[in-house]
Structure formats: C-alpha cells, structure tokens
Image (tube, rainbow, N blue to C red; front, side, top):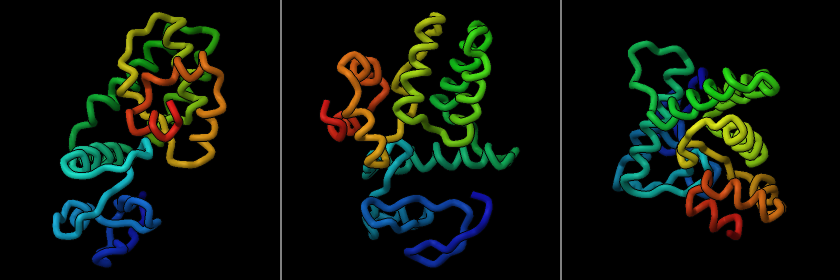
Length: 177
C-alpha cells in the first residue's frame, strides 16, 4: 500500500485494491461490493470469496492496512489478528530459546497478515511447546501460490496433521486433505 493505483474496473485511484479471482486484475472496495459487477475476490489465505464473506474480509484487510500505515482514526483491528499477535507475544515472553525467531515471525505477521506453511509449523510447535493457548483458525496460512500448496502436499503425514487446524476447508481441499 502507500502509493495510489487505479482500479481496473472503474479507474478510480486508491491506495487499497483487492485481487479479483482468477484474473490478475485489481478492484477497489466499491467495485468489489457492487452486486451488479458480481466480482469474487481472493482473501489472504488464497480462498475464493463470494457474498457476505467478501465484506467481512475486506473490512479486516482494510483495518489491518490502515493500522499499518498508522491511521489513528481507522477501524479497530480484527479480533483474530489481535489474537495471533498476542499469542506470539506470550510465546516470546516464555520461550528464551526462540525469543528472537518468534519476534521476527510476529513482525512478519504484523506486516503481511499471514504465514507461509513452514512458518505456521514453526509457530505451532513453539506455541505447543510453551503451552500457549490459541485458536488455530485465527492464524492465516497462505496457499495463494502453487509453491505453498506443493509445500503442504509434500509434508509428512504428521506435519499435515499439525497444520490442518490452521487451514480453512477450502485450503484443505486445495492441498488434498
């Protein structure tokens, strides 16, 4: 974000655009939410969204983006995003061995709002080792690229079982669970 770009649908210039499903094109919030356009979008996980889920995801992405560019009057951060950051903070405080790594992963999540599959396994391991209670469905694991999907498919069975709670049903289908 930060620099304005034109919406591929209406040519309005905006700082915040959303990827349109299977097109490589980008649309502004108004175009995505316009029912006449019937635009589907891809969320941070790589899931294809339709209907009411689009508005919720757009609101979450907007809140995170505005927070990152330090807009004080922006919407509150999504609870799921805050939950992930606080779980990482708790793990970092009690895990002396991986304190630096967890700090870097927290910064990564704060900026990107998702983890790669391998990063997710590392985070899951450290949270479990330190007894940090968390909700796996709040963590966003990206499966937007073929590389990330192939990574999950290549995991041993025990790794696939560990990462499964962090994936949405649509992601599990993509990764042949």
